[in-house]
Image 1 (cartoon, rainbow, N blue to C red):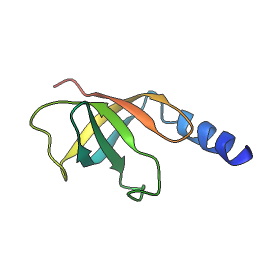
Image 2: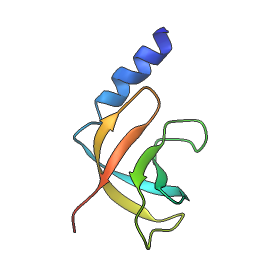
Image 3: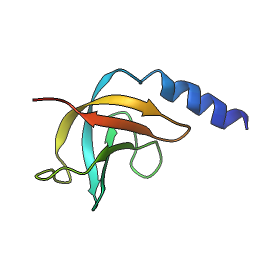
Length: 79
């Protein structure tokens, strides 16, 4: 549908960018966060592979590697 296409195009502009996110949820395989401009449970999530010592509420910088209609997929920024 038209709204999904608009969302997809908007998300694509973040690919290759570095964003600061806040961690919303830590699960077994993935960590979910969002940017300051996104509302929890309403807007898209930034999804990262699991990493130890990351907690809900942490602010981190990530590289956006991929995007789809609803979410952004990030990689941990090298230290």
